[in-house]
Figure 1 (tube, one colour):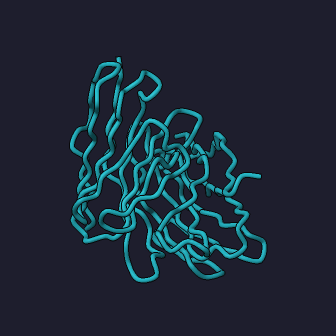
Figure 2 (spheres, chains in turn red, cyan; figure 1 turned 60 degrees about the horizontal axis):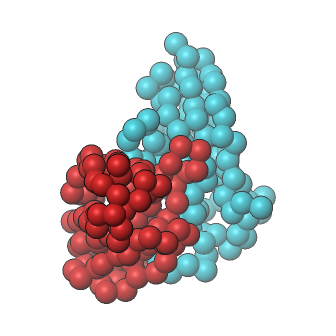
Length: 114
Length: 113
């Protein structure tokens, strides 16, 4: 079974802090993704990575950055946290020949910025 | 026009009935299609993948794909209260080689005992 592990289920931070969300997958997947999910807005892609050290902006990259130094780990960084970044953050990974395999999600991190 | 569209619902069905969830997509060259189930407060979990026109059955779930009409549907037979969740349709663009999926907003299903 694919295992995608997010470092925290719940996190509370203060405005202006630099926040790190970590994600690790154990399936040697090439692709990793960060989403946020808010009521009524669905899943929105923040950033994704298709290889080590490679990254592409998703639909809402502003205020975020990412790091992928090792294949199994993909980090999301909130450079200076703001209250409008309070949300559920979901990490996913996928791989396979032709890149037509589904994404598998971690359990999510519910982040509150006070 | 949204790339992947779903009726947000809620879709309400009685226990034991067939629930029919529909999804349309705009990219004609899309190749891979997925259905996810998401319980409130939880992360999405994959329930079905379909790549070819026609039906694909897995237990009480049947995915149906019609590429000519650009729609994919999910049927849930003998619906149970535990099926109450939001169902997300996801489509992989034919032009993407990075595994990126386009998700619909999801349809909320309520199965009433």
